[in-house]
Image (cartoon, rainbow, N blue to C red; front, side, top):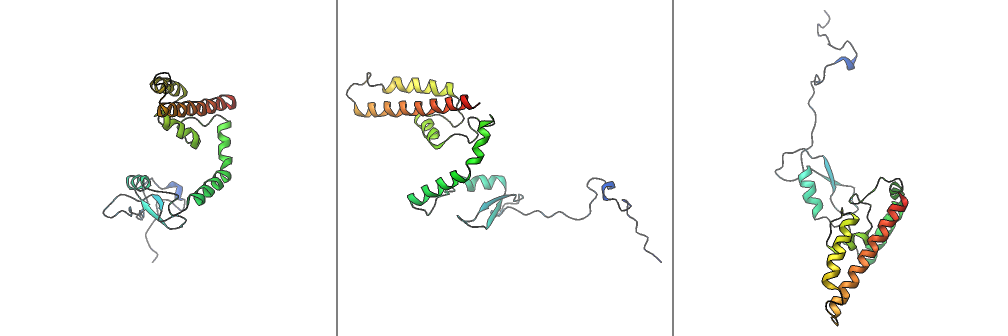
Length: 177
């Protein structure tokens, strides 16, 4: 006598109801000891290693906060790796040409980020905030305020250079977009 088990989909899996599957789904847990969350964020175990930890989002953020990409490299090796990766990934900068890129989305150069640090601003600061910060800092360390002070003159030059870097970057963005 043939089996009396019938399927409800008549051979067409698309007719099955949602959630009608009977098999259990496999979920990998976070590799952090004691964490019961699903581990869906890969993180490298060591530089240049194909092996990955699998963390939950919270532990991946914690892990990445202390990650040093250039750990174990000399200054020259780190600069060579950085320039090679910038060269290899330069095609991704093309999106800025189409106006898809803007402040705070990773489109700022290292020089721009240093300039923002000098002015005490966040990465997503717009140019109006740059001008405002530049004016307030320039008033504090202008050589006319403290004549003959070498430290003040040096700080003023750093602020001027930071403003110039950010002004030129803003002009490039306006011209491209």
